[in-house]
Length: 430
Image 1 (cartoon, rainbow, N blue to C red):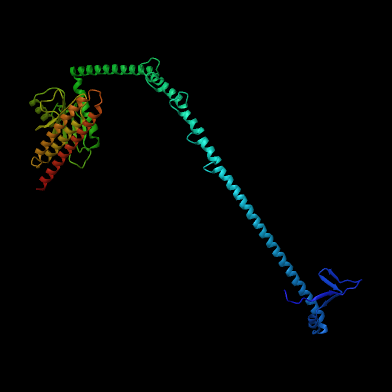
Image 2: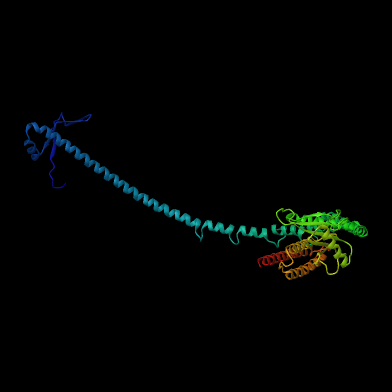
């Protein structure tokens, strides 16, 4: 620092022997060295002769270390100055590079004057190459465009009566694939119609033959018994054909079948309904007499007489209750199961009422009203059945209405039975 006194160090020089400094490994050897400084000489003089060598050694060590530290500071400052210069140069280079990149980006991507937007506009713009290409490709007004060619092809195959599709689907054209199919279907229909006509004729002929012979009544009887056999499968009642077996009256075979109420339940009381099937006209007294004899011959509580439509007495259709039993009227060729079931259930109700007592209190007037309602519904059934003789679009609807009316008939019978049970219960409660 300025103002400080720096000791003067002079070598012990001679012409032949200058100051020598030797470095041997980690040792420093100094020879012929003399320091001229009164203060330092006085400081060293104050030391004992034994300490002076050690003090000089220490002074030399401290001096060298100080010089070493000062040299390191000089080197760090030099590095810092070099680094600062490097940073300044790099910043300047970055500024120049940034300016150049910005200029390149502006020339490439700028909305105004940029190379990329101009290229995109040239190819993808409203008037670009792609727009012109697609317009030409899909212009329906141009026959040579793709869309125009497609319209031409589609028109050839699908447009109008002259198209190829119309030719293929027209069954009246001889070259059409459907022409042979149409001819085959027409032939099949003709064959079916012919078979229907033949079948109808054979059925009419067979029906006429049955009307002339005795087989008609036997066929009718077997159909009715078969229907009742199937009908009673789900009940405790059972039916037995007895037309060829003599009964309680000697040599009498009156009573074509017998329905045994609760026949499958040994613990319940057993009642009997005698069934008579008639396909010939009889007078009222003759009918009453035959029913009375059939009841006695088969030991039955009630009689059920099933008439064919041609043999039924006036006012008996579809069924009616008399003092001897129940009449019901069905088609002998196709007995209506609903009418047969209604007749059987009415006969069963009557048998139960008679078996309990004449004064059971059963509301027979209510039963009569219900029967009148059933007769009205069954008249509707007969009208609907007439519509089923023709094959047309209303057949399915008519069948649905017929099923609905049959369900209503079963409901009415259920209501009658419920009224009878309620009346009987009230009578026994008195």
